[in-house]
Length: 449
Ligand SMILES: Cc1ncc(COP(=O)(O)O)c(C=O)c1O
Image 1 (cartoon, helix red, strand yellow):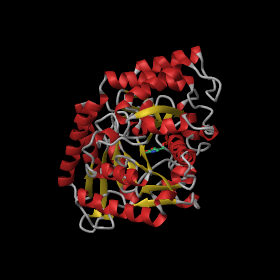
Image 2: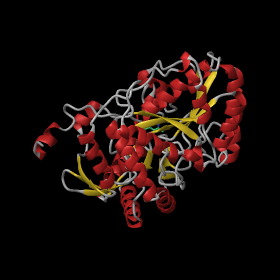
Image 3: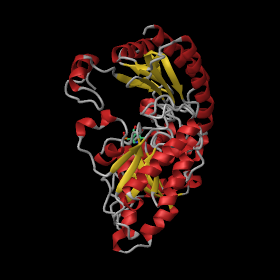
Image 4: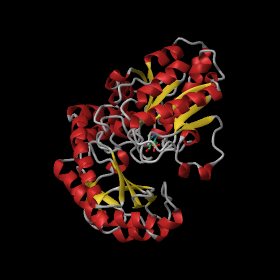
């Protein structure tokens, strides 16, 4: 490894970073994270902070899980790679598919298609949903419905169903045939509705209207995050997802639950779908499936969807997949990660510490006028929306957001900015003391606004 001076001098000079301006990164080089332990990260200068981002909503087991590390290391020696394209398989992939299927049994998931991450999983679900209808003799069902504020990754399909324009505009035109319903976002919505249940009914009416307009027979699937993550931790009313499920059922539309963030305990339940009492037709997973230790995702299919493919003629063949689908090292990470996730019962800690973090943020809102909205309280996903004028809900400017971020970091907590939101998704093993450190760090950040 080159020395620290080399790293500082070359930081962002040759590497283009995702989700940022390359010129900006050259001028203001990113923080170099050089080490980590438990829920704490350490930068190249030795400054330690509690990682309230959990890497990127993914390091559910924290940074020090030796069971997962050892499984990865061992597999590298047993079999570092072999293709899973039709004709060959590998032992760890078989074992991992069994473990994932068991993990999501309550959600009715019967089959597992491994990918390399969340965007791949979304793409897989979107593509297979079209194929599903084609096999069933409805080839005109090609359109997709989704929610504004949703985030579904950056492939063209996922970006087309994404509901935040900053992930869309530079890459348009996107895929035709994608239509967006309002988000269950009580703080801002076209109905000025603050009651989540009434808002859910309004969105349901908009969805029915759109389906009637498009023609139900032209729609393949509806995709939604059980709790919208990157869009600002938008928690819908308790009945919203069920309502969407009923509408999909009535119109023969497949429901895809994007569980890339909410899967594996983050919501306080093993899946966001279970959290809201819904069984989807397909699920997109990634992140917590390996706790970020190896890039793996999975697209899951219900038994009913699986049966359509498995009992079909030639048109059921899946001409879709990735070189690293069912990667043996990734699969070893999955099996170990799920075993650890269950052994540590991370969902219970996510529920407890999530409530602590949410309640602490509500208290901070009493102290600071710039906090316009606090969202969360369902596991370890918390969002604070910052405004310069609480009455007018004027979004906070980016310079102030960055000042808050820097002051919080100096005070010992790493948080993530998403527009005028502060987003938090710490490891699910975070302790009570560490959550208090997060709240103290945030307090210092807001004081510096
Ligand atoms: C809900 C959701 N879907 C899909 C993705 C895309 O996942 P990836 O970045 O692994 O491609 C993300 C990433 O944050 C996500 O939050």
